[in-house]
Amino acid sequence: MASSSNSFIIMIILLITSFGHVYGCYESIISFGDSLADTGNLILLSKSNKVVASSVLPYGETFFHHPTGRFSDGRLVIDFIAEGMGFPLVPPYVGVMKNMSSSKNSIRGVNFAVAGATAVDISYLEKRGIKNPATNVSLGTQLEWFKQMLPILCDSPTSCKEFLENSLFLVGEIGGNDYNHPFSQGKTGEEVQSFVPAVISAIGLAINELIELGAQTLIVPGNLPIGCSASYLTIFKNSNKQEYDDSTGCINWLNDFAEYHNQLLQQEIHKLREIHPHANIIYADYYNAAMQIYRSPKKFGFTSTIVACCGGGGPYNYDSKRPCGSQSSNYCDTPSSYVSWDGVHLTEAAYKLIAKGLLQGPYTIPQMNNGLCNKGISDQ
Image 1 (spheres, rainbow, N blue to C red):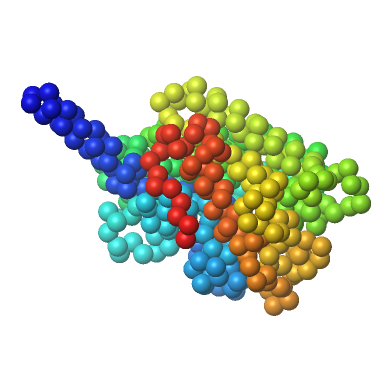
Image 2: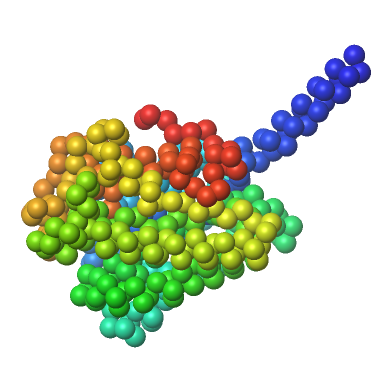
């Protein structure tokens, strides 16, 4: 009997240890990034006389049935991660700050991501003749917002230590706009590639600062295969068939560029792991999670990969002068069968598959499904 009682007590202790945190393993989700993760900050930051694309239909139509500030027809990767781990959707920072009448104890996550944001400070690009048409917010700005908000999220050194240790940090995706802006403004591939070390350094500094503040678990996404993006396919369209992948229709050199960024990012993460062996820094392989769809679209229920669902016409249904949501743009009937939403961002269906590849494997290093508690992604 004694042995049986001891076994029961041990089992109870294990259960308490396993489920001691809110929502299973973490108390909150803290997110940084750009339009791949923005859940409404750009809209809330924008001046009243400036219309943000994601503030009009058909943005948000599939899931929310109205625009939310998300640059997609529905949910983003961060939404699926939150849902998969039993969290409510992570609210935008600006919205949280405007509604601080609610109890701070009810805050289970904050999203600092802003569409158009860069990893490097805006001054870095301006010195090279590059403008950011969307925002002057950088990853450094978002980190400052977080530090300023920290006393609201926790009110003592002890509680802040517990809060940081028990929060899941999503650092990105960030860095894509550091290349999108110069590429769209006519900079050469060689020149833009010279920016990559500075972009990686900015991301690395942010990760290092978060860990020094007390963060324990961080997910750091890489870049998507930009050579498959309808916007890039339109900008760099040419008759040289050797530049294109026969099986996907994507531009090879642009995907090589994305892989170069991802390679340097993984090297930076490796260095940070050596400096902070106690931290769990997870690389999220957005590139290959997306490439599985481009390589085998029918397997995942997609009929169109590189043509945008919503756009202004042309071979890839993308025209920067007639963006999705404008009066002259068109909109497909079945966004769930498309990978590309508006030529720059992906559909909810594509983001859902990428998130599934992160939560359930194998597209994270180390595997998230071995190191994080999650309930999986529902079919809804």
